[in-house]
Length: 244
Length: 96
Image (cartoon, rainbow over all chains, first blue to last red; front, top):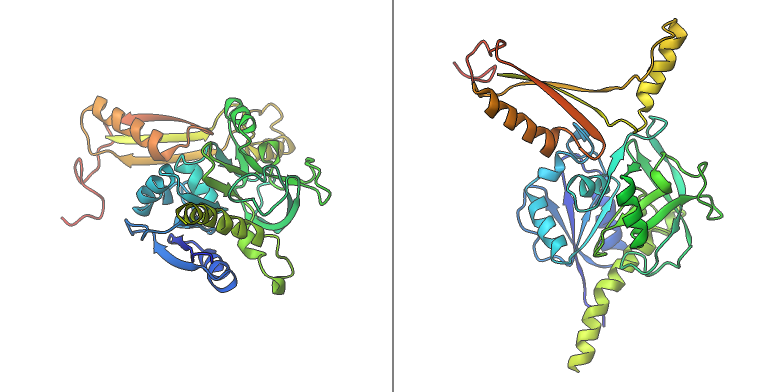
């Protein structure tokens, strides 16, 4: 029997996708979820952390720039450095970049507008704890909703990301082609999501929590959460088998 | 000490706002305008009278928060003649 996992969803002032994440994890996937206020210094012993989308601190100065200094981020940093799973969605991704937990930075969308629509992303690396339910090259339809999703990093960083298979999602056409036309925001190399070198921190601009149930007409996002749940359960199962 | 800080996107990073403004300038007849960059301007009273200390503080602020040095450059100037009328180190609107 699988153990009930404990997820923490961090709520910053201005977060607005926190309850969508909580809904998916608790109501749809039956996990235990604790909302964590950004002023909390403790993560309450959770198994994984989600930094949700929204407009933390009104996007003042730069997206994610102020949230990075919230008290909870010290604990999130320690958790990530100890190997804990951290998923940053949209503004959560921007916060991870500002915090230096993922490399690179976000620029304003190339066309300067806020984009809110379904996009296609190709799974570039299915061998991560966030994508184990996907197949390599699989095309997912997931909505984006952002004004600053134009991923940028210097050449050295980009080549390191590629060398270590850290680019996890790329914007593509419905057929899986990573063309300029399929790139909604001007991201370098069509990058939609990356992980850190250790593999336990993932940030992505699309919102998997907004497409994780049949009633919404799209369940592609569910794969990300199912992957996390499976990956977190696996080591426990292995330990139980060994001790038995 | 008053600090005036300018933050712009690094050279080589596309600045779509700057480009749009450049095109508008051209339409207006300012045909010789180029390299328009849009940035941020911040000013603040640094509660320091020593220039070197103020400089070190503003530099640290820019590096840690005000600019994202992956994508942005910053420059600043310090002005000791523009003392806060309430006196150094006092905030405007503070209780007197």
